[in-house]
Image (tube, rainbow, N blue to C red):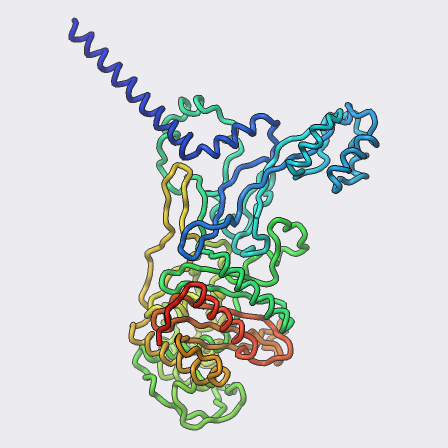
Amino acid sequence: MPDLFFIRVRLLSVAIFLVGALLLGRLWVVQVISGETWRREAEAQYVVPLEDAFSRGTVFFRDKDGAPAAQAATLKSGFVLAINPQAIADPAAIFGALQEIVPTIDETSFYLKARKKNDPYEEVVHRVSPEAARKIQDMGLPGVYLFEERWRYYPSGTLAAHLLGFVGFEGDTQAGRYGIERYYDHVLARGAEDLYVNFFAEIFANLEHSLFYQEESSREGDLVLTIEPEVSRFLSNELDRTTKKWEVRQGGGIIINPENGEIYAMEARPSFDPNNFGDNSSLFVFANPLVENVFEMGSIVKPLTIAFGIDSGAITAKSTYNDKGVMEIGSSKIANYDGKARGITTMQEVLNQSLNLGAVSVMQRTGKETFRDYLFDFGFGEETGIDLPGEVPGFLDNLKTLNDVEFATASYGQGIALSPIAITRALGALANGGVLVTPRVTLRIDYAVGSSKTIGYGDEKRVLKKETAEEVTRMLVSTVDTALRGGTVKLPHWSIAAKSGTAQLVSPDGGYYKDRFLHSFFGYFPAYDPKFLVFLYVVDPKGVSYASETLTEPFMNIAKFLITYYEVPPDR
């Protein structure tokens, strides 16, 4: 009998110890890991919560060393100014007092609401600053109340706006509408009911879920982006200068690490301020054209065509062809940009002079089916898998027919439509030695419980032999050193591989415009061990014909900035 008593005592002691350990563990999580969150929630209980008072995870940019830097998206706190019309005897006096502190208050709206004597609650102004709220509170105005509220705030304004997106209403709830706000809404969102949960009630009612998480994807957390704000700002400024100079209606750029797919900057024009997205009359401006739109890219496809030919064994870098200036394929005529014949011409000159007939010759030697297989191996016609919403796959349906003309035009970047992120990803395989990687804009998820998850896909695929990528890189370096702007933009101590592209824009009436073009440009550096690949495009620049004229200068400015900012050592 005594033994049974001691056994029971020991079992009870063990049970008490285990429960105490669990409670201590939970207290550590709440006070240490989530202390700031609980502090804000405790403070919120001193005011009447509103439907739009919400909590949401923070999004951070990263610095050039990869550490979290400035906040890209956070919460801002303020107050709702409300009135009880039944308690206001002199609306004019109340309005006059409030207007001195909150000049934005609308007089007509205030008086209409103040006359609703059967309504005890009317909201007058949102997002009143804490300083203004204190002044109003000190005045002790009858029938005037202040209620705390929080809203999404983007400290950098328009910077990376298309990538970030914004938070807006979907029915009665707020959720991410575009960009990473939408893609990672399941991570960033916080349930309104969580703001006022009793701590001990939560423990005992949901013990298992309070202490353990069975699905990592369901955890709430913050995001650290791959976006470096200074790099993004420099790209943004270059786009602004370029679009203004050439009166461009649309353009954009991507700066990516071709080795691992991390995107340092992604900017599009026209842009918007996510803090004031209601000021835009068209939803078109919110969609990210770098991911959600496709274009015929023109001559930046030619290095890929030559890579396909070399990789398949159909040509070598020293192969030649007879350039007659014009080629008849069925009932169609294909010509170089200037219609001139070059005679016996090398593959290097195909890139140097951007010769359409050279690209067609390479495609023909490679074979239509092999050429098409390479295009699909490079991911054209499918999504890249970037962690942004609304991605549009490329359009290559015309290559399913094996029509000779369709393949001829595809070899120099016309007739097939690709998204900027898709062509950037594909060109990255030339830079990194022949491997297709998945682009990404998020570096890491920091979960509220203390753990973190680095975003990485591990689905890299070899699409070219390493020797092929190195050979095409050598050719592109030669193009920059000798042909691009006559070799005047060459950097003596850093090798740069680059190519411009000019494509006719499709007319809605069928066919192509004769005088409207899409200009594109890509380049990577240092060419034989690249840290950066830059892609730029502009739509319909005015008073200029070729991309080498519009985009060489901004590309070189960006290259010089990155080399300096990241202290990239010379490679030659």
